[in-house]
Image 1 (cartoon, rainbow, N blue to C red):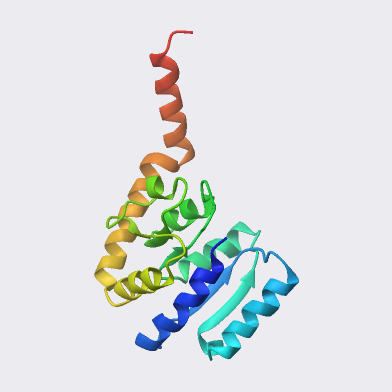
Image 2 (image 1 turned 180 degrees about the vertical axis):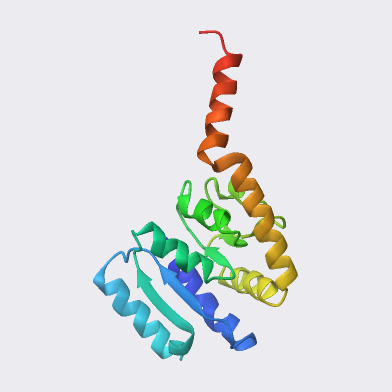
Length: 171
């Protein structure tokens, strides 16, 4: 879904800030993909900076991972609506995501995170580095994302919008 964009951004990020660590989660598309990914990590000397945790189906474990993170990246090439973005926003994480599908409607560029052209690993690396060096900006974007989540994406907010729509339409 765009993991290669993230993998190719990693060496660019680590060269400029060796204190950054990446944790990748989600299902692997194949066993060969995992082999290729691990080979890329080894070839580029990124073992100390990388961890692949696979798919996390347990809500508590996923929440724990988000809460240990500083930035959430979503370098998708083909998602229409990334529900995981809402999880990141709920945990007040600034997001760096590719412009694809509904992502630009979820992530407000420069406010709740940064958007970048899909597949552009250099742009992804630049935005990660920008957020990594500015803790105040990370906190501000995370707070803005949480506020947007509360306003638009909680069950209560959704229900209130639906009620408003139903009341405004004659049936």
